[in-house]
Image (cartoon, rainbow, N blue to C red; front, side):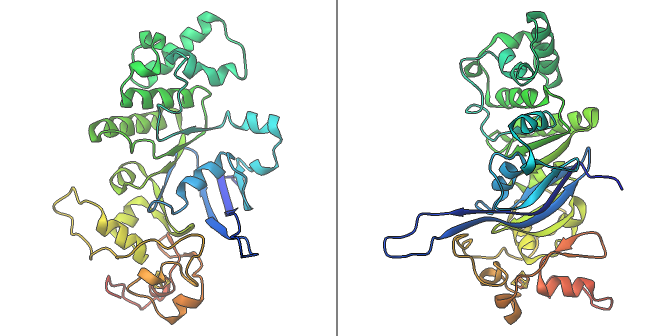
Length: 336
Ligand code: SF4
């Protein structure tokens, strides 16, 4: 049986908080709950959701920058939680990360050339000539001039710094790049350039991406599949086109309804849901979306809906909508 490049199985991350002065129980922040998905080589899975939904924690768990409370991350069949420091370092050759703020992730005292060749030099020593040749090649790959290798991060624009971050991630020729809000700090025109660069690199090098974003326009442009997260859980996982053509989970509908519509021919869905995202320290019982959901029924307040596979290849965690989608005679309706 073919092993997926990445398999995430029931991944969970809880952060115990400091107990109150008079309370004995330790409150727990439930950042990620029971998240599962897989990713093939050359594929892009986008993870979307409002701020605080746990998507960035998933990114950190994938890179093992934090350890999970439960669940597994299998990279080419190997559970990264079981790796010792040396093995984890070796596995990082295969998995790299691009951060939201390229400036704070680039050492201001190193030149661009030193920054982008540093990951390789952690594994092997390079001569000056080899280092310059590698830096020139990586700079060209991300659309920058080789002579820029002698400049410092402060001498670059935001878009150029993000290109440097991508060049550094490419240095070890990874199979997977986890990009956490990698374009959200950039102007729209620079965003488009960086997204197109990532798409070109994916075609050329067969890299898979886990792309974390709150911007549905970006996700629609770059994603093959999309996982929608709400309060730590995946509530819908679907091929990108299917998700935008017909969102099934009420929260996905609300997110798409709230997003700007650049295409005037596309019909805007119903008005987005109102209210704040509840606290992950004290999430609502049953379906965590029920206090904001216009379709909530009594069962929603009691039972957590499981993520159920639908006949069209998507998975949905909703008592009402997944039953409708599975029933052979049921007609799906936006108002149902
Ligand atoms: Fe709404 Fe109930 Fe579905 Fe949750 S399970 S999204 S509350 S209908």
